[in-house]
Length: 372
Image 1: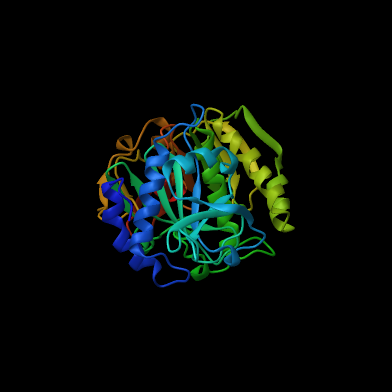
Image 2: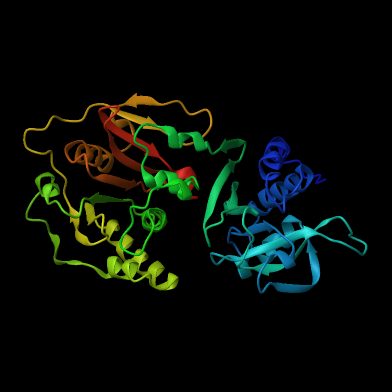
């Protein structure tokens, strides 16, 4: 057991061990405590002035594909992890950790090398920034991970899958919770509903990643009603619509090409105003100003939920969520109930706005804990 004494490591280890015990390979509570403790203290170090960004995966080399193996395995210690960080900070690279099977360190957790390919249900702990750790699980879908818990200093947040049971839950939220396989097929030609909605997840992550804040309005492809909620002339209306992303999705393009296309489209949300895209992923305009639809009432109350344990649904004013972006997004969805709005704040918060017919109001889903 580790002796560095990060209190949250001891607190979360038994529960995480119970969660992952349903799958193999599964770390025990002692292994999880060691990994969380080492990752936390590594996150507080600096390597040439830079905060380490690392991902630790509990898997043996034989559980992975084409692993990069060290001649001598390294200890799971903050100093060793922080020194390795510059080599493994690129997305998709994980440090493999497994108990040594022989030698003077037999039974101890050791870092055996790196890998890009992990087994399904693998335990992963990611250092996001100083003091901020995310416990993830590799799903059965290639390359997809779902968040299980978030640790920030002395705060621990466990993701609550039951949040998918809220009225009129967005498919995007179900995808973030790893419930893709239960979703009906509503994707583009050649795609499942899960695959299609996962593109929205990638767009959301990229929007949050550029750090400038932004808003994305997703409207029905067969309707132009959204124009009634936009100030015209729009400075960056597109004619014809940009179909680069939608064409790539339809032909099941290369994953790297899709990533670049997503980043290019998401970058448009950094411009002041909102980006408009239909649900076929054609970009219609960006930098647009939202206005209240003629004859519509001003939104004063919305329902707010967050997919973490202990969170209680509340009724709030849109102004309590943030600034102009949140107010205008809530108004847009109120006036265009067949649309959804995604809003990224500069401080990292991320909100999905969707009309709930059962609640008869706009529902705001705060999901940044799922996008870390």
